[in-house]
Structures are given as C-alpha cells and as structure tokens.
Image 1 (tube, rainbow, N blue to C red):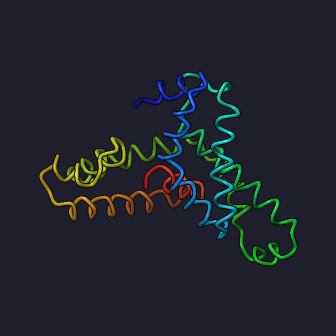
Image 2 (cartoon, rainbow, N blue to C red; image 1 turned 90 degrees about the vertical axis):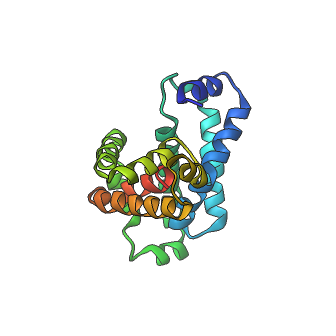
Image 3 (cartoon, helix red, strand yellow; image 1 turned 30 degrees about the vertical axis):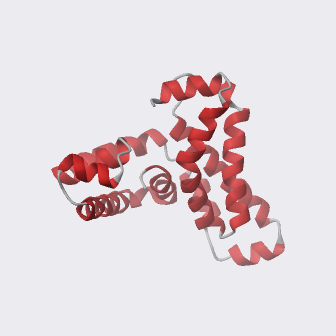
Length: 190
C-alpha cells in the first residue's frame, strides 16, 4: 500500500494500520536497538516507544509524510534518550566510557535523510543490471526471495547472493556518513 494511503489511515485513527506498520518494522527496529543497547528489555522498549509515539503524534503528520523517515527519526531519538538516561547510571557509564557511540549518534543525526535516500538511489543505479533488478524487486517492491527468483528466472541462492553483494556495496559506499547511514541501512535497506 502506498505511503499516502497509510498516512491518511493513520491520521484518521485507523488502529489496523499501526499493526501493519508494526509487523513491517518491529523486527528491524528491535535488532537495531539491541545492537546498540545490548539489552533485550531496552530494545523492546524502543520498539514500543516508536509505535506509541507514532500513534500519539499521528494527527501532526502531513498527508505526504514519509513514514520510513518518521519511524527512523523516532527510533534514533529514542535510542539517544536511552543512552543519555543510562549515562547517568554509574554502572552503565562504566560500560560505555570507552565508546563514542552517543557522540557519534548526536553528530550523525545532522545528516539529512533526503541526502541518504538520494545517495542510495544513485548507488543502486551503479549496481550491475541483474543485481539492480534483484535489489529493486526485493527491497523497493517488497518481493520475497522466491518471488524475485520466479520473476527473473534465477535461483533463490542467486537472489540471496545479489542482495548480500548489493548491501555490502551500499554499506561500503555509505561509510563516509557514519553511524547514521548504518542505522538507515539496517532499518530500511536490510
């Protein structure tokens, strides 16, 4: 379903659309949060907070709002808040004292979402033709690996190989954008 319809349903108070978005994004949000917080309860709290925030602020959305960017921003800001809270606890401060993750997130949060999506579009255009087809069908159109294989007449293993190589190419070429780009990739490119 297209973004505009999802946003319209969300603004109108359709709770089912929240469930649909939860099914689509909760696992990615959980894995991302767990990767940085190393705590299952904290990661689960992040996921819950993202969707509570989405629901509570749904009327502030414009009908042309980008839900991917919105969820991405909520997750990023919630993780930053958790880091800040944990920093005030002595034990957690000890665990994090040699890490620069919080500063990296603060610094990288200034990276423009539109710049990243534009950069990814440019990078996808640089992929070899078959890899680009696989990537577009899988990541942009949401086809399963089997559906991509059927559509292109190739094996599922070949599809998986193309996706792995495309992700590596994107990660390698977005490394200059740092942690923010890696978060973006994990949430919306994986």
